[in-house]
Length: 292
Image 1: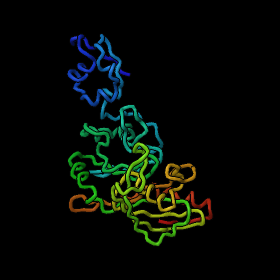
Image 2: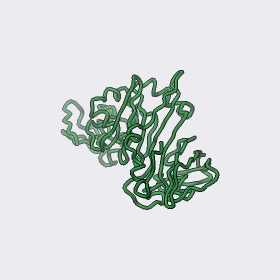
Image 3: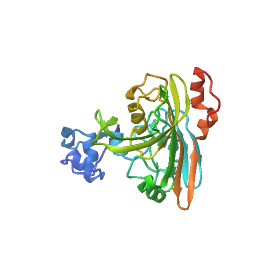
Image 4: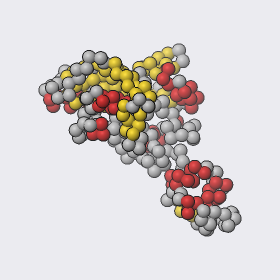
């Protein structure tokens, strides 16, 4: 909580009036953090207000997640997100996210141009449970031009995953319609949904699991998780989509290619390659040679 002591205002005002007129907060922002009775209460001498209300779209400088690996060039920061870390915050108090990590290591200057959204310069997001590559545009004009046409400029979106069961589906091009359910927390097949397309390549298969390479044609929320589960092979550890519990969800954003002006930016998850992260898990079940 943050305490404010406003002395130069008319104290017959309601709290809502003060927040709207003096602090330039929108009605939607006020409604999001204050109940109706609080909004209509008469302003008192000192106020205690939620830090999330007063710091909307500001990124917390404290990071409390796992180690994140970075690389960068003149235009982009390449972030290797661990599983269990969010791509972005949804309120100021959130600190387990990649943007808080950027601010915590003095790269916050690249967040400053973005004051109207939580995603800042991220070109895309990946699920909280998914690990892998994120690309952050340092310049707002670059972000706006690429984000607006991302489906056209993203030439390759490759993911790796380990699924339960042996992948033996002959048609490796999956095309279904997906729609949200369970209060928009999960996705499932529905004729009322959006078209979801991906291509599957089996790299290795055991009796109990398969290592797959996924190339995304579309980019719907939870798309890979939902489509593989619907095909009878949920991702290892993805309890929400029918898999047995494990130490993590074995899904990783491995390789992105984007068209940037007259060149192609091609970036792979180098830390993933260096540490052979999925191979370490697969080796528990019989040994695997280098796969990539």
